[in-house]
Amino acid sequence: MKIAVAGLGYVGTANVVMLAGRHQVAAVDLNPERVAAIAARQSPIEDRLASEWLATRDLDITATTDGASAYAGAELVLVATPTDYDPVTNRFDTSSVEAVIRQVQAANADALILVRSTIPVGFVERMRAETGSDRIIFAPEFLREGMALHDTFYPDRIVVGANDEHAVAVLRQMYRPLLEQTF
Image 1 (cartoon, rainbow, N blue to C red):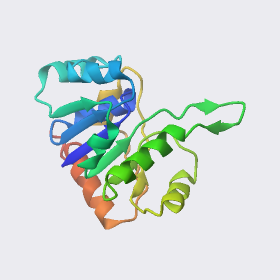
Image 2: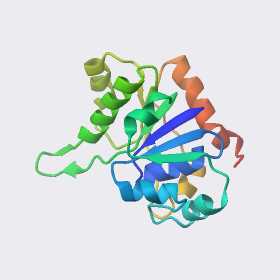
Image 3: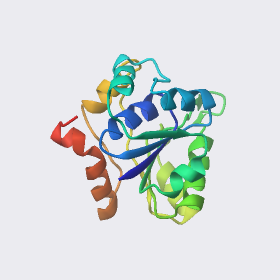
Image 4: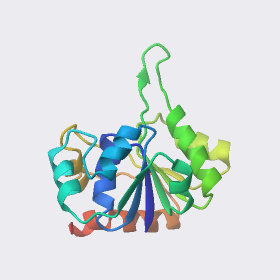
């Protein structure tokens, strides 16, 4: 399966590394230094296991700042961009997630969009209404800094907000290594 991952922080990098052992993964970030690190098989985050896997495993990864080209051929796009909390407005800044969703839809309306960023309750429902697409789903992450790849491989729970058979099938394929514990 062709997968694109938008955002190369802890969540995005851990997912890129996990998925690239079984899938063709395009890693996307606006920061050229993070993209260059992934392209050089170096981790842009502090995570010993991610660094080790990038350096030693056969992973199918390309890295780019050009989201549109990465999203164009993807069956699944994971969105793991920052949604910093603003204590002044008492809200999460979801603008980066919204921008990626719009980019994905412009490049590939058939892609399933899996939001892994921290978002407020009702965000996916609002984005589905605004975009007219039911191909947006949510699965929260539960990762610790420095242990992101470990926690991605050994989650204490997997929660997915989806009620569509196609989405469930794609996610089963994506999570197969975890379900079978084969990495």
